[in-house]
Image 1 (cartoon, rainbow, N blue to C red):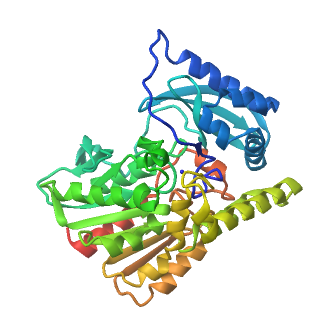
Image 2 (cartoon, rainbow, N blue to C red):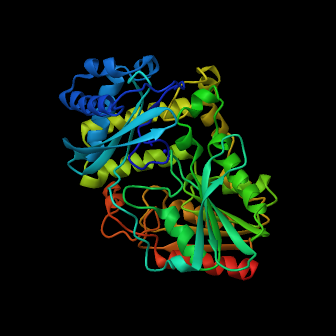
Image 3 (cartoon, rainbow, N blue to C red):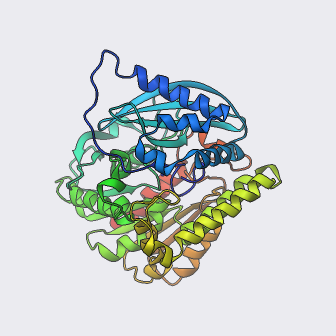
Length: 452
């Protein structure tokens, strides 16, 4: 989910202690939320931050006072250029919350303001997320829809009952299977980013090649109030690992799946957590790391901020100030003393103290020392979020592991899609698909390691 547009944590997430309420009834339940969401953005643009606060519920007022709101809005414009206009809205229901997406046009691209309203039409959550263009998904040429069946009625077998899709090859089976594990942020089952759906590309491309693929809604998307529900006791185990293991358990129950050939594929944060998952689940036959960080997230955040600010070749005084502010926040989330004393439900850089304390105890490379399973590590050369540095660290650390395979793609970005020119956040607004070579390399590796 992201402090930066597409950074590894949360996309300007300000979601604080939501409480479930009964929705109001009315002739047009969307009229007020849409009007207020549009007015909210207009007030931001006008710099009327004190007026904006009147739209917030109590928790949001506490978490995002006028001064912080001003800093957030200026940071967005430092990254994306000057705000120009709004360009339409779309809506969705998330549990009992009315969510309005307002398309915000900046000089360097578009973001969607995801404004979440409670039953009293107060703003209970605010995200700035990648812009998603309207329109239907067009499968890439490497997908053959006649080669598999899409089952979209499944749910993960745990208390959260997350909706899931299984792309199941046609035929008798049993088939090898892959669980797709998301990167950071409240991702849907397709890991939709702008007009792109990398997880659907992977699922359908691999199912065409005889490999079943399970993908599911991320817990932070299905339950945007998850930090409140867990009273701040929220870590990557809650965000990612437990649900990945529930997905494995679901696959093991399906007759057409070979329960001895189940693989976890982790992208971005999911890839970083692969060594931890490998150490704690013996039901998984192999693992795939796609753009997984080998270094602390906080280190990558610094690099991403500096990279984006430097895209124009200079660092302005405002940008330098933001870098100093980021350094201050990182100092907090890397201080055990501070985290031990902090309010458990406080949100720092998009996550509560428990989240950061947990990550302080996790070194992906040290966990990788205990690998006993086949592993495929993949990296794009035009990925500015997780870089060649991380890929080289994996390669160096696992060089003596005969079961480790490495694939590097010079022209692909963080989504493993072709990137022309200089990598930047605006690349993700261009409709594209996961590169055919990536699909073929994964399929070949699975069949070579685990048989047809």
